[in-house]
Picture 1 (cartoon, rainbow, N blue to C red):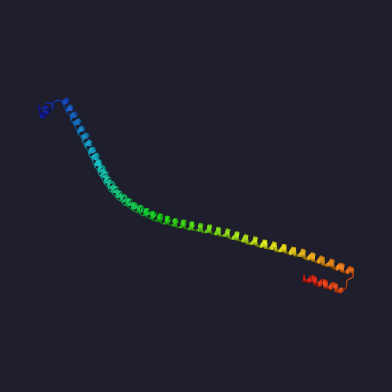
Picture 2 (picture 1 turned 120 degrees about the horizontal axis):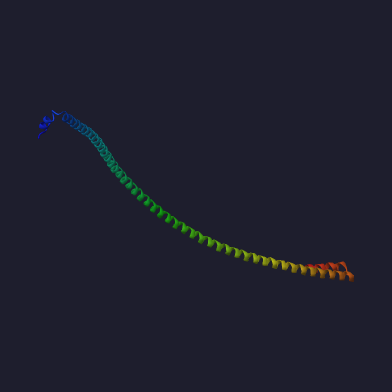
Length: 189
């Protein structure tokens, strides 16, 4: 039967009315509950839509930020590569200059060592020549001293002989003229 027929049949009965009212109340409670669920679900859906929209905006913002950071990173990497290349070029240029300078200084050091060695040899030669000259002069001085000593001894002997002769003549009674003659002969000798 249809709902209208069932309603009429139960319309006359008070227990049926109560059951019908109870069913109507239950039905209305379910409808209210479902409406409340619908409202809650619609709110939840709105909140979820807002969250999704915010997430999408944040995701897009982050995507742009990542692209921007990647671009900056690429620029910095390029700058770093250029700086690195320039520094390497400068390093190589400085290294070449320093190697050249070291070679020049090494050549200068070798030249100065050679000159020092030459000067040392010349100094030793000069010292040996000086020592030879000094030795020669000392030899001459010693020879002259020896001659002077020999002459002094000889003179002393001559003087002694002359004195002895003078003493003999004085003792023998010689005259003054003989003494003068003897002195004159000693001076000549």
